[in-house]
Amino acid sequence: MGTVHTLRVVFALGPLALSLLRDHRRWLFWGTGVGRSPEFHARRAKRLVDAISGLGPSFVKIAQVFASRSDLIPEPYLGRLCTLVDQVPFLPFETIERAIVESYGRGADELFDSFEREPVAAASLAQVHRARLRGETVAVKVLRPGVEAQVAADIHAARQILHFLDRWWGHPHIKSELIALAAFETRVREEVDFRLEAGYAMAIRENFAESDRVVIPRVYEDMTRQRVLVMEFMLGTRIDKLDPAVVDVKRVVQTLVELYIQMELIDGLFHADPHPGNLMLDAEGRIVLLDFGAVVRVPLSQRRALVHTSIAAIRRDAEGVARGFADMGLLAPDTDPRDIKWIADLLITNAYAKTTARERIDTLLADRVLKTLFDSPITLTEEAVYFARTAALIEGIGTRYDPYFQVVPIASPVVLRMRTKILRSLGENVQPNLQEVATVAGYALGRAARWMKDRVKGRRN
Image (cartoon, rainbow, N blue to C red; front, side, top):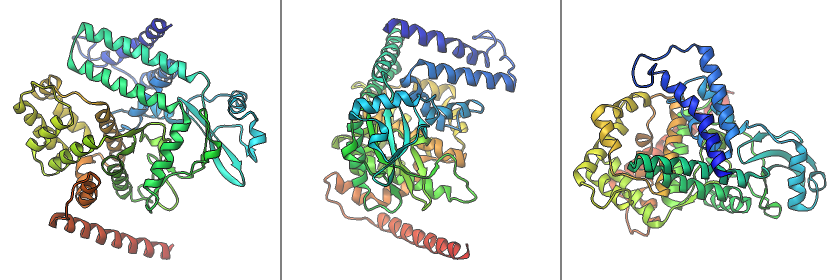
């Protein structure tokens, strides 16, 4: 069965991959690209998303990563990929009803005051229905039947393909992909047990209990089962659908960055799936975080190394960043420190460049740069895979509204402002320095000014 599924993956995606390559080389290795009409791109985008949807939930989840990258993925492909976030073909109510009966011993109409037959969202692993419970509106998340076996088949197929490439090619980056696949396998297996998701949601809600800018939905613990989860129903606008004429998008993205800095560097427990379907802005301007299936615990040693690497990056200290790579376990033992320093210096320069994401990628694709990065001994650990993925997704959201958006310059003042709190969470006895005090003062004045502006605007309205 595993080999058959692997062949299905190859036959489904192989022709599309060749078609994309022929956009640039008519005969794959030489010749000018083949001309493509807008109608052709629309048809191919549909074929691509249909193929991904038919391959299994794991491939859908991987494709969701690219749904936020408007800076990298052109239309009509981006629009089609966005449908994989929460518009996967939904299951009929009869299937959902059977899953509810298996979990509770009673049907939806007996358990809830009311239960909407049409789902409000359908994703790769589950679908969500709105219901009423004890007079409150709730979201009922139901796992798709048989999804565990589908996920296992998807991962087996991906591993077979990567092992084949590793034997044929033997490049370190293939080993990195195998590490990333192992990380994905761990998280996706947790995602099919909603009892774990409920625990993560409650822990993150507790961590942000005092926040006035972040909202985490409440879990109905007594209704939690392995295959069914009941949570507070949240209303809001998807973070990729905001109107810049109405919403201060820069402020929203800054809050999003601060949210992830707290989760990754202070709490050591972070939401590792920040695609646009899981992030909303409510009527009060607060970020609403949804779907806690993919949550990563960060060991103290990794947090400490990540913090000091981040501070070195803010100071534009290439040697400090290179040391941080070593402390985070990203380097082979026999790595030449000069190569890593060169790469760190390049990444820092690129992170602060006043260019678009497309221009930064073109810089990295220069012959010497690409060869150095391609042959570099840097391999990601499981935690680092999710750090990188989260940063990429946040940058994708930011560049949707500002083509020059960069994560590092936005995150730098946040890290400086929270420096003492971050280091104390790591057990280090530190006192605020002058730079931190100035940053906090500037932040406080900025928030006060925004508060006054919002008050005046509200009074006018």
